[in-house]
Image (cartoon, rainbow, N blue to C red; front, side, top):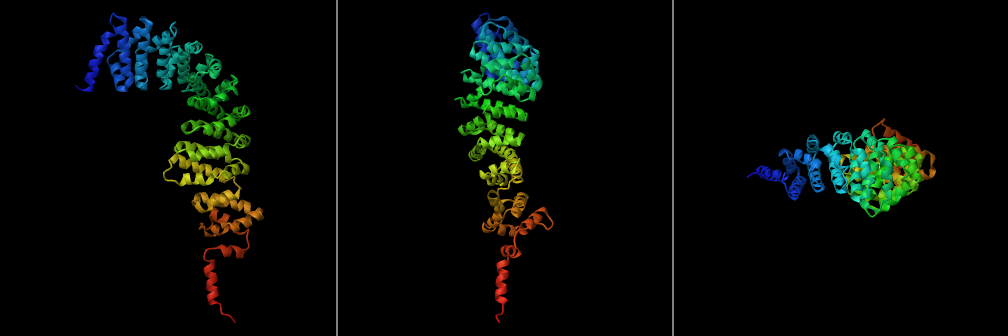
Length: 475
């Protein structure tokens, strides 16, 4: 017997039990179907093909609360696997029955219905819109006001799954007054509830300036910064993600987060975290710094650069390194002072090696190169640039030499150091195309020194001297 035949056999045995006259048999059969459908998408598909869903939908309206919970569990278990299976649940008329269940007296039934609606809405905007059109959102907002913590959690999670897809869907959630109720729960001691609350606020904030401002106006800052120290890793990550989604929009929103101590708190958070949970914090610092010189300086003053440098060394995942490199570019690209802060943390050689490393992902190479160029074009701190003279390929070297050609003509101390450190000798060894920008930068550097010094450090000069010694005829 094939697996398909076995499945058909199981379904044909369970289906009549859903109509049994004994309620406990009905519930047990529904639970068994739910557990099968939950296991994988093949089994969920088998439940759909056996035409069991319409029967469950019908029973949701008719039966007792135990059966309703079991029926909603089956619908959730089928819907969770894919958009196609969720669509099959919608097509059999489940939404209306689930929304009616949200008005049940029993919190367990409400919870089961909210959970199923969330699993339908999470796949795409079209399915989420179908959930909205069924009238679920105002009832979900009522559910987050119920005393039961489990119900609050699931209702908040479902609102988050609806809001995430588009500004319009998020606006629908906001229009029912969800933000004020979510904001009240940000200080709830239950970690799993806070996870969902911060997730929902983040999914609302991410779409537009207006939505982000509405979340900020609920006056959740600075109180929520305490959650960056929460023992629960996902609470911490979701708060940081919320802050990232707010700061990315405008300098004003970023400034508001800076003023409440948000940047310093996120930098501390990066120090206390490892791995993927660092990512939203790294990105948030990049977004803040990108907006303006002053905001980038706020990141520097809060000691963001050394902390990001630690992240760059400690993290092994390329996508985290790429985000960190991008953040350095946003911090260092404003002025020589900003670039010096990045360069002084010894980040430039690290960015160069990530760019040159063939093991780095394409995205990491692109981000590292772009960050390196952004910082180099502003950097006048020569001690940090000198190591790059020896390692950088010509496309990066051009930017390094350019910075030396800007600084050396105006700084006698730097000119002397450039000779004693071997920099001038290295420049004479560079083979540049005649007439290229690189050759022009080299000429500018050479014109800062007496001709005999330049000749002395040019390749082949010692051999030429020896030849003159050999050919010299004493009088």
